[in-house]
Length: 239
Image (tube, rainbow, N blue to C red):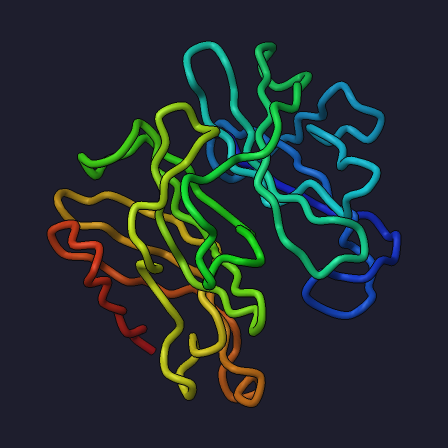
């Protein structure tokens, strides 16, 4: 088993979406396991042991998503300018020696104009081989960030080469719940699982600020029966 990780040091900086705090100077990491319980970190050939370092002008290189393509390993990650609110940028690095060293390949680009609901960029993503039967070889399900409200929603894009992407729809496939719901403040960090003809969407969410004490952050599930991307239905938790 392989687990892509990230962590931050104790340097204090201005968080892009929050207050000044330690822990935001983040780097991507990798751990492996034979049983999924006991994990071993695999440091790269860098001064810190992280897979890659952030550029001098950036706050971090974090939220990694890794995959294999032939003999190469591809690492997608997020960066944002130091002391900036955004926009968040998605980048890619490649390794041909099993993850010991990485070469940065640059920013991901998108066809067409950036929509309003994504003007502040992409925070997190999952990239998998495309199971939908439409678009390119790769499917990216990602957290889009709106500029004015910083609202998070979930959208899809496809690509043939993993660098140039095309949005699959002209709006997010999954958005926040009602204002009083536990996921009414934002939905993010999506993970898509294909089960037969159905699509299972696991996501992180949080309530609006006024409801934070009543509704904690958590993980939700929504299912698109028959792969219908326009109808992800939330599954209520059994508590």
